[in-house]
Image 1: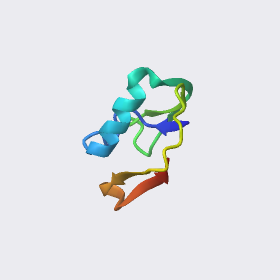
Image 2: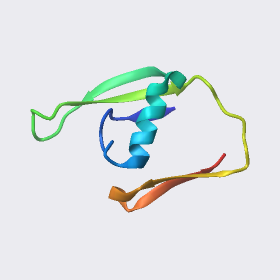
Image 3: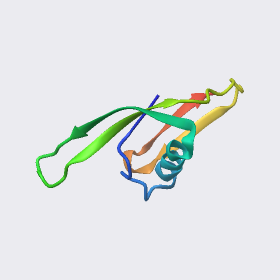
Length: 77
């Protein structure tokens, strides 16, 4: 499953790559809900996608760097 706010932080290369992967057809939209902020003009949506092509474990490490958060997401595949 992937939870994403479409087109949010896509100026960051790692987030843009994630957005492209989600839009590739490999994922199916499973749920969607609206979110709001203190500014009513800033309505947005959160989408939850289900992976249609699970991958086999490779034993390799994957890291997605998130510079705005000063961190990264990593996982052994």
